[in-house]
Image (tube, rainbow over all chains, first blue to last red; front, side):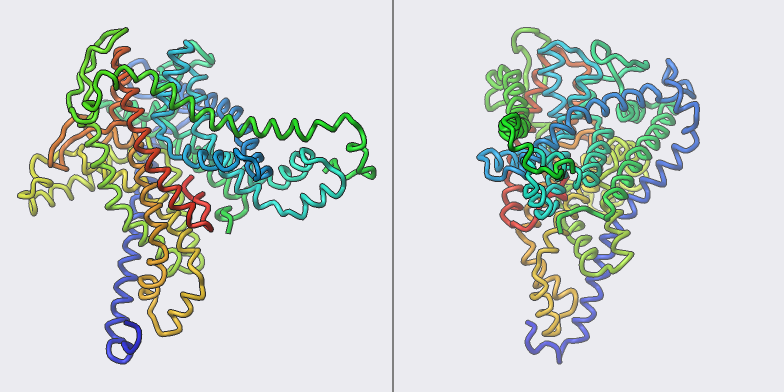
Length: 290
Length: 326
């Protein structure tokens, strides 16, 4: 169709080209407008209630009552995400080291494939598993620790995949140089490769944390939610910002929804702060292997 | 950098360090196998807990729509037919795919082929940002603003124009399968876009230049050079997006209306598997919870199959990391 078309239908082809570009631009608008709306609506609805009181108090006993805040959610999120980091980051980076530094092992390919697969496991299923295995079978009960473990399982494949990508970018030269100086493999890995990749590793961890902090579904089944501030690891139900937002979104009361909006703004600010910081640390728009 | 001393052989010279490399290898090998172990235990434990339900219902779990959990602690007394939830999950995910895939391909083409310089960076960043917004925030925004103010009027208009078609028939409710599908579409759009963008980036520049060389317009290059090459990647991205859509819980739960219903009308409420697990959990009896775990196992099996297929397709393309899907 390209051959001798230019003479006869150059005009119609140019018109078609222009129409196609307009259509593609409309597609972009259709994605960007809702995103802009999410920010505008969340800020407009949340900014009025997101004040010092909201950040430092817990919610009133009645959902209908105005005022109060989500301090208990912030504490719960911080605790669960903190513990999830302690679990998933060492394990995830060690796994990434295994996959990149020992490519010949018989386990390397299965581990890579199944960490990929794990990124697609529905988060609610992870919640069900932690409930069935730890909350019920082991008898931990609802609380901070089961919630943290669920978040850790969801963060793990993200940490592994991003760390793997970064470790691959470490030049072979500095590995060789280290080996030539007489360092053992573990010394090369721990003292040369990982420090060289540290900014990229931090970026990946922050993105995983941003994802983990926004998880809601698995927490319903593991932390369960509470209206009170608690810092115990087990034995007491825990709550989190996403859980409180979810609860508020389902309630018909004006005051509860008001708090949900403020909580949503708080959570979005938290997540975006982490995301932007991660991007700044990585120093590039997207640290993909191109 | 502590390895760079003046006496490089001092460590290797001692017997003390001889086992260190092997030990290190075992440690990271252990970490790697732990990931596999977690996945295996997840499957084993949930399957074990829900086995009595599957054993009692058999194929009826997928073919019956009677979900009436019993209240026993030790045996299975209720009815567990997941068809209505399966229906809701599949239909909302299909709507999401039908809407999101063409949009994503369009966006990816625009970002890689048309947008230039700062506009490209900014738009790429913006679409990526959409993936980072927690689903509960999207859910709140959807149920309190987007669905009642934007989607509902659209549904009403479509109903007025095409109400004779069963899909768009009365009654039109704010919380509906259609609304859930559109919200899902928005949520899977960034993932699909990111992968399609990666796929497009692998098109050899020579072929594009050759096409431009014989006088093709931008659109003709996209249509006849880039898209045919990207087909496998788009299929992989679609499957990955589908996997996401099937498992998404919170945002869907907030806008779908939560009624176990099978029927033609897209503008009416429904319920998904994930939504039923999350909303039914707090009030479920011990037996009912096993039923919910059975739902989870079914959902897991479906998503994992689709995911493995997607990974397989994307991995086969080689040059792509598939990493954009994080």
